[in-house]
Amino acid sequence: MGFYSRYVLPGIIDVAMRNEECARLRAAWIRRARGDVLEVGIGSGLNLPFYSPAVRSVCGVDPSAELQRRARERAAGRPFPVKLFQQSAEEPLPVPEASVDTVVVTWTLCSIPDPRRALERIRRALKADGRLIFLEHGRAPDAAVAAWQDRLTPLWRRIGGGCHLNRPVDQLVAAAGFRMLELQAGYLPGPRPMTYTFQGLAEPRQPGLEL
Ligand SMILES: C[S@@+](CC[C@H](N)C(=O)[O-])C[C@H]1O[C@@H](n2cnc3c(N)ncnc32)[C@H](O)[C@@H]1O
Image 1 (cartoon, helix red, strand yellow):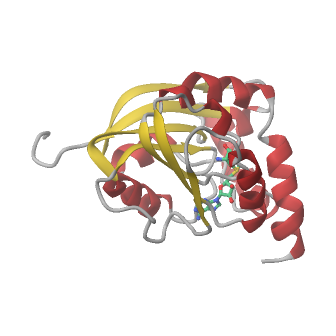
Image 2 (image 1 turned 180 degrees about the vertical axis):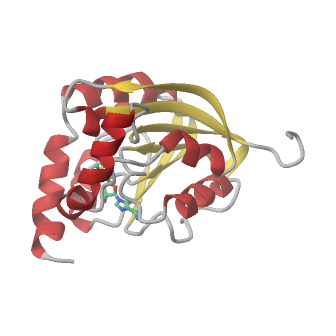
Image 3 (image 1 turned 180 degrees about the horizontal axis):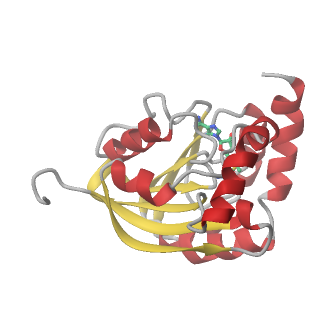
């Protein structure tokens, strides 16, 4: 990992992810987390102020040491314990299987090299009645926008810490064994290839209960 990825990019991410639109979506969705929470790609901890008193604990994983340093500062003084682990979500997660009430993943599935593997680990970490809350940008339904997303992604990945513009987030979540309970998708303000956003709530599908 070079100087840019280690020190420059985390600062850019921290500032970029503090924008008003992200804050609006965080306020709408993160308060719905309950119990023991696993936050995947916790970054600089920008969701932490939005958790409600219904949260018992937060465990955050993220490979970036610099972002975790900022998350640790934001965790100080929260009314729930926050544990941070420096790792990829593709690795075994630091929680027992079927132990988590809510998994939160925001603007992160775009950057995980193997999102399928990460989502499978997330599903296994959730209790049977657990919930996945996700806010993610991804592949637009408009062919012209999607074509731009495909064109731009190779360059965007290089400057954006592995970020893909063109991942079909809803399909990835469903394919990893989740049932969608709520899903909203649409463009946020800004350039359309970067802003098509999926907001959703999903639960792990129970084996044998569905066709
Ligand atoms: C755009 S930032 C979003 C951070 C945070 N979730 C937020 O909403 O502000 C993307 C995050 O994904 C993290 N990330 C990248 N690769 C990852 C991986 N393999 N596993 C888990 N997180 C990863 C980055 O370190 C970064 O914190």
